[in-house]
Length: 58
Figure: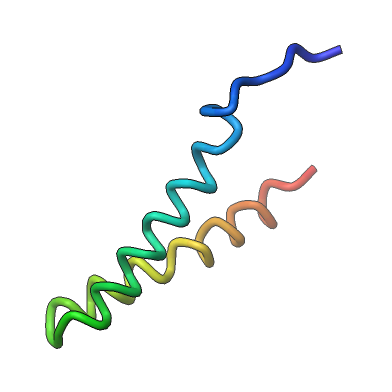
């Protein structure tokens, strides 16, 4: 039987994905040019996490 993990360890990755997504949404609303690029990068975080999870599922 595995030892229970702490809340910080369980929610670390989902919190990071949420923060990057929020940053991407806000950056896309702020302005044009570099902000658009930052928005695209931030909004690809959930897709990158999904691709990683599909590739590494057991």
